[in-house]
Image (tube, rainbow, N blue to C red; front, side):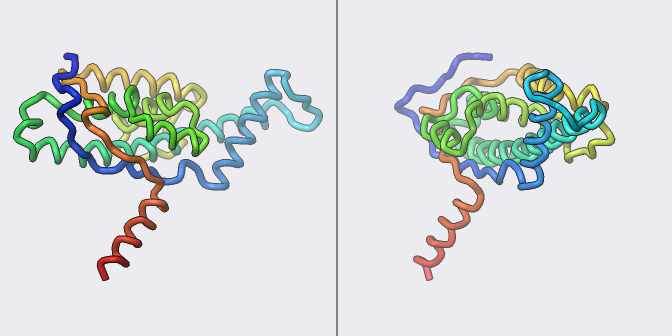
Length: 206
């Protein structure tokens, strides 16, 4: 992978990244139960009512929900990358510079704009790099979110390790130029937030 060919005097405005809610209420309950079960099995919380089989089931249900959550985040990221590539293909300068989907994927993981990182932290996302990396890794393999019955227990339990490697495989598929968010700025919105912005714009136009 080559270093960035662009200097900060060159700036292109790219579409906003729209993320849908990370988890539904039921999913949040599963994640909380999974975390509690894991702590019980590690001896960090007392256990006077649950058997090991039940605790393991809770852990797997929580991990399965994590997979679904990562997959749908990856769909949002992949949709945004596709929109950016459409702009690249229409721009005479960018089209010949070796920018690929992997260029934008790496920028999302390693060099998201500071404003985007701040917004993610305000949403409670403390490690967006791991989330984005694993989300993009899963979306490099699955065209649709698979049912949990199609996964082995081993994959569900350790999905984060597999997803990390899937992302690395995606990065190594071919040559691409490195880009930086200073040259390719973008904004981040939650889906509901962006919908309200569009509604206000429509109201002004009417």
